[in-house]
Structure formats: C-alpha cells, structure tokens
Image (cartoon, rainbow, N blue to C red; front, side):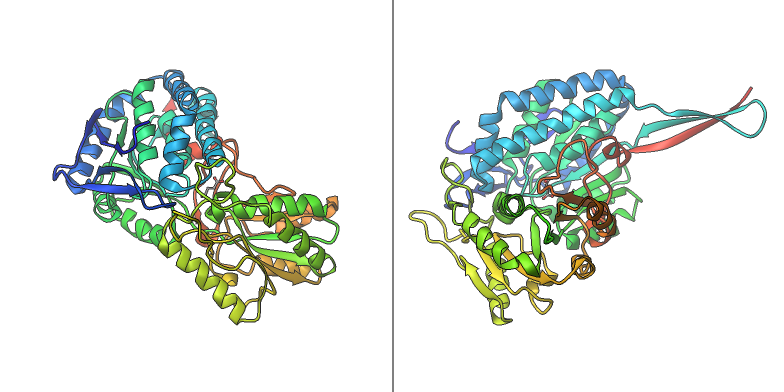
Length: 481
Ligand code: SIN
C-alpha cells in the first residue's frame, strides 16, 4: 500500500473530489503523520449524492431480495479477501492494534452474511379480516434513501452494521463517515463498487459533519437517518429529522456497569474485565465503565485485575506486540485525564497506571491502563462515559444494592455481570435497564443480535432481522373478493 492515500467521494458511481477542490487531511493518531486525505464535501456534493440515491432507489428496490443478497455476499467476500489492506488502513487512521482491526473487518463482513441470509426469507402476512371475503396483505417496503452517519471508533463495522440490512431491504444510501477516519469508508465503497452495487446505491460523502448533516436532514427524499455517536449529536439529529419526519435510529453513548458477584468465577471475570475495558483502548460505546464488585471479593478482584492489566502493552497499532493503541485525539486524552484527576481528588485510590505514557517518536496520546479503587457517586466517572483505558471499582453489599448502582445512570446501552448462580442469572438480567446484557459474557456484539440501547443511549436496533425494521415500512393492502 502506498504511503499516503488520497481517497475520493463516491457519487452516482463516480469517484470525485469536492467541487471546491478542498481536502481534509487524515492523521495517524499514533504520531500525527499524514495517512492521506479526502475531499471536504459540503451541501452541493451531498445534494447530488441524495439525488443519485433517490434515482437509484426504484431499480434497486424492485430487484428480488435474492438478487440483492447475491451482491451483498460478494461484498462480504471482498472485505474478507482484503482483510490485511483494510485492517492496515483502519489501524493507521484510527490507532487500534492490527489484530483488533482484522477482527473488525471480519465483524463488518458478517453483517452482510446475516443480511443476505435473512433478506430472501423475509415474508409478510395474509391476515383474514373480520369482514367476510376480505383479506389483509401485509408487506415490508424499503423506506427509500437512508442517510448513514458513522463514528471513528469502528470505522468499517459501524457502516456495514447499518448498510447491510438497509441495502438488503432495498434502500439506497448516502454514507457520511467521521472526518477522522474516512479512509476505511472509501475502502468500503470501493469494494461495494467491485461487488457490483449499481451506481447511486452506495454514495459516500466525506467532510465536516455540519454542512453534510444539515443537507441530509433538509432533504425530504432522505427517509431514514441512522447514526452512531454521542447522545448530544443524536439529539440534534433527532430534532433535524423531525422536519421531514425521516426515521431516526440512534446508537448513542453508553456507561456500562460490570457487576461481579461473590459467587463469580473470578478468573473468568477478571479476564473478561480486561477484554471488555481495554478493547480499542476503552473507546467503545459498550466498554465497561463502572466496575461494581461484591465487598467480600473486591480486594482479590482488584489485585488480579491489576495483574491482568500489567500484561497490556501500549504502542503503535501496527506493532504486533501492541495491545493498546493511542487515544483518537487530544480532547480524548484530556477527558480521560480529567476523570482520573477528579476521581483521585474525590478520594479514589490509584491502584495501577494513572497517566500518559511517553513512547519514543510517538504522539503524547497514549494513556496507561489505569485502575482506581473507591469509585463513588461524587465522581465524574460515575456519571459520564470515560471512553478511555480507565477502570474504577465500587463495592456493593448485596444484589439489591448492586442493581440499584448499575441502574443509577441516564444511559442504557450495555451492562455485564458475572455469577455462577443460575437463579441469579435470570433475575439480574431482567432487572438491568439496558438494551444489551452480557451475562458471564464480556463480548456480546455479533451480527445476529439486536444491538442498541434504551434511555439516553438511544433507540433502534442493528443486527439480525431487527436491523431491517429501521429501514422498512409495513404496508397493508386490504382487498375484497
Ligand atoms: C460501539 O462502540 O458502538 C460498537 C461496539 C460493538 O459493536 O461492539
């Protein structure tokens, strides 16, 4: 792969630059070196992309679901064929270790496998109505043009998690990736073209979010907007979507509790805690953010957790020995630092890590895996998502208190708990007010499941047959014989 990549936008099957010729540099968060650039598209390019998606809609929607599925399967194959190239692009623009980037490529491809399996079998219904001789025929119809707005933390999989059911259902797309990680999106659009997606079905506009998002929301032809990102931006998009009543699907912030009961398999819980907390340097919406541990085992848990953390290696994602890459930008590091300083000022005890790590030749954006004991409700970490490699532990006396603590948040994306008591398993799972619960499972994400949250974590589900519902309308035909 050449050293610097100039990605293009894709509008109506044509790779293009911004009308103004302006570009945005994409920088490696590990060392600020330029990875490449993409066009700084704005309202004009976005309007053309919507126009193209709108024209492509009827022909694409009228193909058979099996036909669409064949192209999507090919697209999954191409993503897998090019796993090494795609992973390298992702690591360079996002920072995550190559092994995680390869995992993300596989995860991204699996959404097309699942959507291609489901689409040809999605059936409607014929309902016998009460009136004699009358029948109700219920069908699923694609909503039309869908806007897909994706974040930097999973530059490929967050596109495919939305694009797969949308395309399989017959929608056409305008994709807007985060401006920090657009090169994975460009690489995705190239494979979509190679797989045989007709011109206009997958359009890609790169650039600053404001002008592109406003243009999407102001256009009545955009019938759905699917977004993954912060709760704050989700609210703005929802307000904007109300103008033309485009259907919003919002996967927003999380603030996951991770409960360890006294009867948990401690080794399994500790291994899971490390995997769940430090994946992508703590930069996932479902990373554990508050560790709640039974009093009687808390000291042992903390000791083993710290020892698990000591095995993690920070560094450039392309170095095979790296398990934690850089944080995405300086603001992300500043937030993590603020949370740690605040927790210690409020009486927390630093057990491990605690600050930035200087690595020769690399940017000042590596934060040590950090463990704090004595988390309490006065701390910013109790209320806000940290989005970084910091774990803090709070102790609980009994199950009732643990559940109350776990639910003490406005967010509701993912929660985890560890226990070997089968009756507790169901009881606790039912009482956690979250869209996703990992019961003795720290990696619940998969393409078959309905990923999504409740409360301020948003609404809408991505994955499995549920993902289709965000991109389809029910229609019924009432006929009398
Ligand atoms: C996210 O951080 O929103 C995605 C995490 C996942 O799919 O596992």
